[in-house]
Image 1 (cartoon, rainbow, N blue to C red):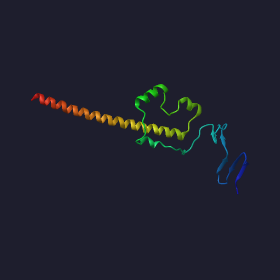
Image 2 (image 1 turned 45 degrees about the vertical axis):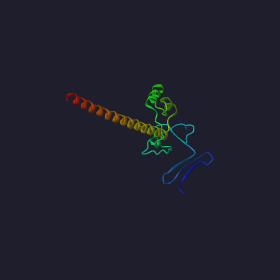
Image 3 (image 1 turned 120 degrees about the vertical axis):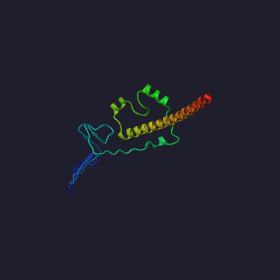
Image 4 (image 1 turned 30 degrees about the vertical axis):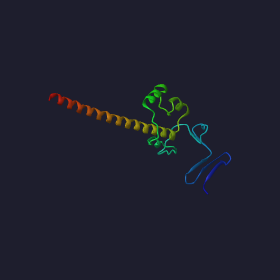
Length: 149
């Protein structure tokens, strides 16, 4: 049929079709050894026009009424103690183990959504403080006006 096969189904199969498609069954290592637990390893730079990573548990739940945002004082304490954000791995872990792009994107989006909630909370608080300040200025002006009469 125009395809070439190498190996056997019990170990591996490499199939090259006459239309130029290459398929490796089991695992593939390019430029080095296969990393344990991986189907494909590339020792070197990998270039692609697009990479699709499938993941689940996308963090839209952050915007539900039941989501408990960590108080900023606790967040500050955590960062001061651990030198990284909660749920985000330490630099040493990433350097040692690498990172899963889908999981990291999920976590980064969660942190962006949490930042958005913190910002909205601060905006609401600032608006209340500004309204109180305006009311106090009006009261002060009214008292000053009454005092001159």
